[in-house]
Length: 198
Ligand SMILES: C[S@@+](CC[C@H](N)C(=O)[O-])C[C@H]1O[C@@H](n2cnc3c(N)ncnc32)[C@H](O)[C@@H]1O
Image 1 (cartoon, rainbow, N blue to C red):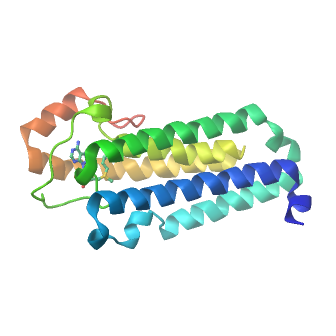
Image 2: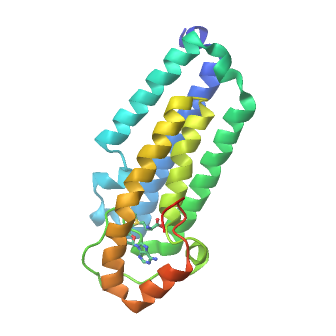
């Protein structure tokens, strides 16, 4: 019934979106529990905020309007498949970050150093200072490229970039307090992993 209304293209692109979103959030949740334990569980581990839901609803609205008014826009399969590739690369980078940093990777920014908190500079952190954010950035844009939604591609890129533009200096303020010169030296040598963020 719904399939008849949205057609083959809509069915495929929306089911791909649902699959990657469900995989992203459930794997973040499972990894958070595996690494930090059930006692540290909070809804933050699901990474679903009000702003995130609003962004996704707006993206779905754009998709629905374009699917009806400009259906040919959604038929650019090489664009859509490139979006899926971005999603997969983004996921791989992010999960590599979570697994490499282990207990040092928390979903909320630590403002006080905990005993187990070690500076991580190996694995993927040798090449990028913020692989978790870089991965999410690619993932978020990839979801909209996958849907061939031009407005949401730009909106998701701008909104996530702005979010990390303020979050990274805040996070690094505390990392410098925790690890001092070691972090300053590390930050001077390794790029953030996000465009135009030093
Ligand atoms: C959501 S994680 C994100 C980590 C990192 N910004 C990234 O994108 O992969 C945030 C927590 O990771 C910690 N953190 C960030 N970089 C770190 C590093 N290189 N070593 C240890 N802890 C780090 C911060 O103190 C913060 O509490």
